[in-house]
Amino acid sequence: MLPVVGRLAPSPTGLLHVGNARSLLLAWLAARHAGGKIYLRIEDLLPDGDQHLPALLADLRWLGLDWDAWQDHDFVRQSARSPLYDALLTALQARGEVYPCVCTRKDIDLAARAPHAEDKAAAYPGTCRDRFASEADALAFERARAQAEQRPPLGVALRLRVPTAPVRFSDVLHGPQVISLPEDSGDIVVRRKDGGVAYMFAVVVDDWAMGVTQVVRGDDLLEVTGQQLAVYAALQRLDSPLLPPFAGLPHYAHVPLVLGDDGRRLAKRNQSLHIGALRRQGIAAWQLRQWLAQSIGLETDRDWVAQFSWQRLPRAPVQFTAFELNLF
Ligand code: GLU
Image (cartoon, rainbow, N blue to C red; front, side, top):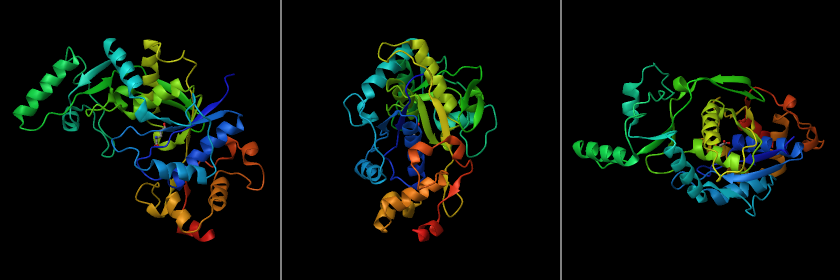
């Protein structure tokens, strides 16, 4: 069996809150329990994506999480890895796995065949699939359209063709999953119109490149895992020397989220539940760690790493409210 390799993959676009901390602690426990390594990867692909990086690193250390160096780097930053992503995208484009797309969100909604829930974007109907001979053609089309509409031209996105056959995987906590990508998402954006590489692509390239065997993250990402498996499949077909030999898909464990007072999952709006805010309120790291450990089903007076198991983890989301704060 391969040695376990996990990763902590926070996005420094916002500050860490209790929910992020719990998912990261679970990823850390699962890797350390298996005697494995865990790497830190900063997912800073969005413009201004790293404004909270110093605070993020401070919060991780305050929480007592540690990580292993990867290839002499203390941690990996996605923003430094664009040349690899771009080279792989170019190679995929040459094989016709990836194609240029000029559609706007409005075009997609108008063209969508299936009705879709309001909170979920319509699946991409494939309008640009066989539309342009090259990216230059797509760009020329966009420039002409922008001129006719009297607006500045946007860039051209790149999309990955998804398979028609259902994608299957088994999640450690959610069991077998079957996803039909043409209905669920349609062809996936792998490079945005602003030229930036999309999360969906970079996450797979990096998990593969770093030898990640275990992905532990919030269950809001369960749904998009099928899209990530389609990226894996395209990269396997590409068989690029830029990536190490394929060593198998990671195991996925999508963990329940933490809810706030309002019963909704914690997000940027819950400023008072950011780790830094708790620290400023005088809460000690050990107090928060105890709460997190209890919420994970651990007995806090015994070795956490040794006793960790997925069976202990409650399957329902937990609430972290003002009431919890009063306990500290
Ligand atoms: N960077 C993502 C986030 O902070 C997590 C990505 C992942 O774990 O695959 O939500």
